[in-house]
Image (tube, rainbow, N blue to C red; front, side, top):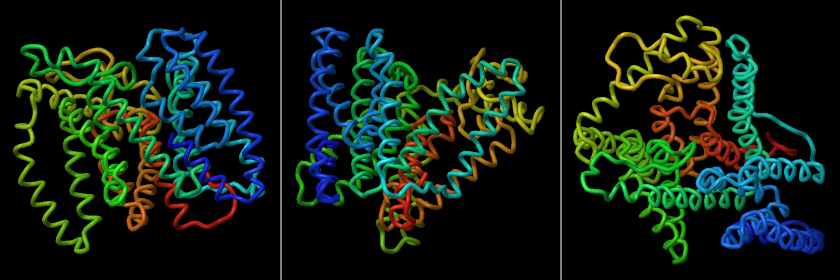
Length: 455
């Protein structure tokens, strides 16, 4: 529905002939909607009629504007029905199908545009360099073909999403659409996670059980990290909608569900990120920022000693988790010491972990991940890879700082998320690049007026 409203606004905002073009496209999209609904119902079965209807509606809107196609793809990256539902050929093809649809829609829009000059910012070059260095790092691995396939199955998709966001999010209402899609997608993720976890969370003696889901966002810490990003988005909508009760209800509903899910996730990293985000929001909204910064630091230092008291997890579980993370980080450092130029190669940390874990106390064995976005980049791509990755992140952070007067929530969300992923392996996942793509798109809208398509 958000895409539908933004599409109508976009066509009214364009030249007069765009309304005539819209009628033709609407007829084509409506026909496609009818055909796809029938095809999806046939594939999924009649009991899944509503789901089939929604999928067909999403594809129909994706045909009208590239931003709609990208928003539809991003929404599915959070809800991931191919992992939650039973195996189905249509559902398994959904991520690739919607991804290709987003790319095709952007390419068509580019060739229909009168301004075809592509331009890259400095941060985008750093990210491209990091991507190319990641590919080079696969050469030194025992199985370059397998690691290269893993690169294209994971990180390459994240890169495509980032550059698509920068290219197609060109107006303020496009950015607002992305915010709203993010909010509702994360709300759906919170609902799915609680539905899947509820029986164990309510079971007697379940003090140590935490929120979980299925698939790539199964872990409670990963779920919590992506939900934290939405909190500043919801606070922005609340602060700008004093006369819009529906937006108030929408934002409060999201905040209530998200805070409940964050509590059930029991993630210390997310709790730290949430606190930093709350203090950050207070600072950017305050007229006397230095006073706000001082009070924020005092508040954080006062509350930090009591953070563990908010957890339902027992002290032994927390201690084992901390010890394990230190072991993961030490193993990553040992990997890069042995090969500082390329590390152990893209995607190789899990297989190299046990041989680099050392002889200290361990609670988890076998194939593990680094549990740090920075350590994972360092261990798998070496010192040059980490430098390129840090240069990209700092460049985006600088852009977020500059647009604070216009988009304060993006800056706060980025700070909170970077804190959360310091304890998670999100280096190659799509989620950080969604947020950073929105920051770059927002920066270009406010500070860069060059003509042509920005990548």
